[in-house]
Length: 378
Image 1 (tube, one colour):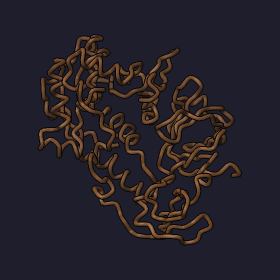
Image 2: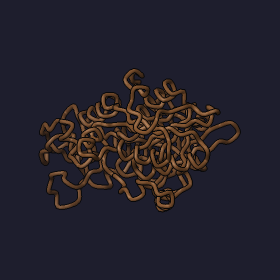
Image 3: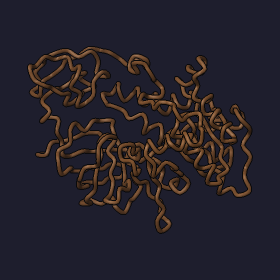
Image 4: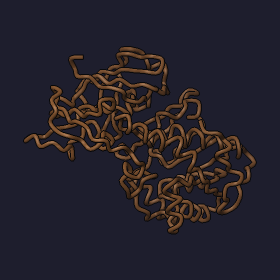
């Protein structure tokens, strides 16, 4: 966890007006605002519902560069905040973000893994260090974002659930939020589609109504992030499934398990990256069938519904953000590890990506970092 002194909200730039606590602290809420349509609509909906809202915009490395061109997300978010007449701060958190997100991202690629920086950003940064700073310095416990997911409260329990718009569902990226914080997490877009969000933005005359979505990494927008981060490009051998050298790669950071395009070997048939060995600096390639796995191991688990984490539990798992969860059985549960067996083979479980488990009610049960995958004969 970052030192809270590294995130100083009280000396941050109040771009509209300073935050003032409302008469009911339970109705005070901070909204993380990127300047985009999703977080802008989230803030607007909370204002309409009578919350005392303070907007928080996080100035990240690339956003800071863009600021010099007049494109800073903080400027766009501040415009929305003025439109809504809410307090708003733009915080320079570049150093904290570098330590919690970019450095682990760089290390993962150096170790032959394919990282999931959005999960680390949510778990360690936004819903970790930043949320703690908001709570400590502003006295605001409630936090909202523009994520597409739901928090459902049943019988004094709080559950993270897939969003109604499954094509936009982001629960996969949120599994690492501590269980005790779900009671204070608010996701106003939970039952909206993207088209409905844009309609609300237009009807509310929000400045972000027509802003395009960004699908790039926020800290490497419009650039080759491997080059931008100075990832190593040491050449090594490409092996076939039997260990025979059949080519040369240009650095393991340029490859990911399951990759087909740009592998660099002319085999006369489609070949895929099957595994990456950072110690030997080799890449093994093979057919698509050889990339199919049934068993997936994960470590550094975060558990949101502990009573369902028992060997033999029938759940649904995702090994990447896109697509629907697939049926699986939880076969092993350790202190911070888990293993599942998928009913149907999954293509290329990738070390460094995340395995997220759901129950039959679309609730997030647990998640962890994929460390290996084995075929169905394992």
